Image 1 (tube, rainbow, N blue to C red):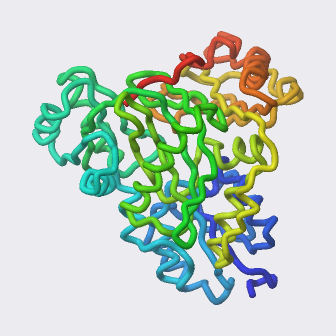
Image 2: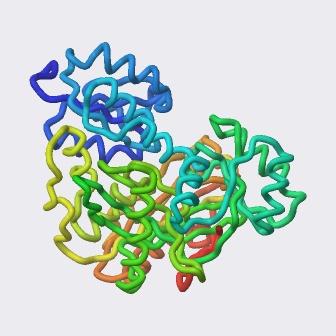
Image 3: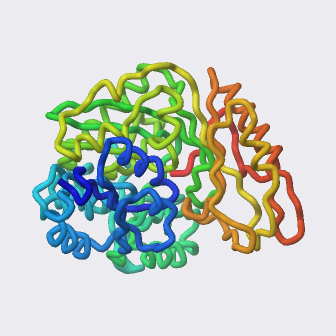
Length: 425
């Protein structure tokens, strides 16, 4: 067994969004090793061992696993963030349950995944990976304007934006390439419609449909998620069609074990898939809103699979039916001077979590990707209208002071039309 008699689980990434996963690993009785490049990562306090290492450092994680597998009795690895390649490589090197590295690579590289889907007839916007601005111009002529330009292998919408004219292409292409490890960019047909985050877990050839949440976006031309509603209240027929595409997309990529998280959009041509990493969702979806709205425990289910146990389907069965909303608050960019009203808002009925990642003295950057978000309010109620009422009350209560100008959070939530999701693609 591990140093203290327990089986060990490696959780790759230890930021604030990974705290629920680290707590779950501890509750399962694991000896928890967490990795993160930030030595002050919020989740490190929950780990038995800290591995200060870039979560995308595949070779470093593999070397650590080989050198320490016997010492800690490493039994599994879990992707706490967009790190499917790192986790797959560790599992392959240490003989642990997981997907092949090449499958993880397809799920983490937008160019490779889109080529698969287009080849296999999976409904998805047409796109092509480009290495030069000249190539990007040629692809843009094919997809027409407006179009999406995306980083190929980044996460949290870094380097992604919509362009409406060819004059915007050079800056968008450069921004995408700058955050792509491959140094390339995807130029993609833009499609409009209602968007969803879809959670599935695959075990022994069966796709288990865990959750489907409505997503709201703002801050065009950037793709910033400003809220999600879990579960979606779209009709059953449409949800079934969405899941059919999700299942086909996972099979096309070769994901046959563990989680597959889909970004979906319903267009005038029906459902289309945008992306599918081989991990659970971020954005506090699998971490908070699904457990709050249904009682399902997808993190625990995936961790048990990672440890070599069979799928515990009871963890994916709904125990109640409520609605949970995770909504952002967006203070204006600048130096944050003070935050007030958080304790008061946290005591409001239905408020489950208030998560803030900036402290006074730190800078709030312009909202050009999802990594720049700094405040989330999570509420749960019996239905969606009441959950929104709780969110709005919390927004009115919390106040950010930026550059000596106190502004109520009701003015800071960002553009949001609750009657229809934004069309960003």
